[in-house]
View 1 (cartoon, rainbow, N blue to C red):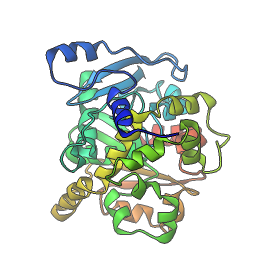
View 2: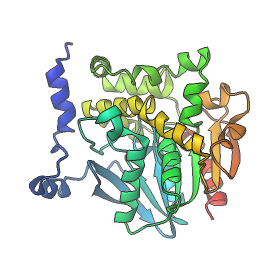
View 3: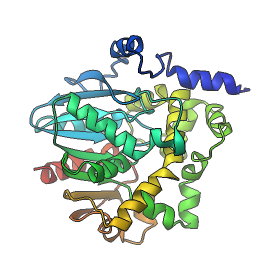
Length: 334
């Protein structure tokens, strides 16, 4: 199959047929009425809604009673990755599960901006601050996995007054990862470099592979692990469109550039996460296997108050060991 560049970029701009992000009053009125995505049944009792931020339309679901808890997903997933834990947590918290800009059903700008700043973790963190403010929450608990964890890291740094506590799942600081590569890491985390390439050809290469094949290979390397719910897999595949391919590649491009600039400035200034941080990782994940048991000491260079440890899982903690994640969150977020 031949992927024409103009057709691909038009599809990415369309965002599943949605209106392009714009600041004109007419378009703002249209995006405010953006239709809700199909309900997969993964979040019974949760309300679905859109929030317009600075340059993006963010899709979220929320529900429950108690202190607000924002959960952020990773790549190539969406808010659906939290479906095994959100219902139980909603008995104790007001849970918000949101798609990062460009991921899931959220729509970001087609242009990455100078140094891909429109998809930097700083920009994505500001989206989520705006989301929580739109829901009436100025201060909240925060947890993120994978790219959502990196967004949570930046949010806790840039908006310390907003974050009561933060949980970081299966990541190490972006600055540390890029500064300490290994052969094993490079071979297993190949997508970090591949998706960061500036040429649109790489996006077209991803789009040339059937969405189901690419998503399943990314999630399991050799097929779908048994712990994934078929409904969640269907959501990841449904959302893996040119819009998402473009947005996720812009995210990785920013992580190899302007995000490192932001991180280095914080490092030089001695700026750390001030909120208590819970760090969890899978013992069989890349984070668990390639860093010689130094995960907590590495994080203590970037956060002032760090606790945590491994679970007997791979990368996808909340889907492979949901009860352990629920219990850890309920102990920590008090």
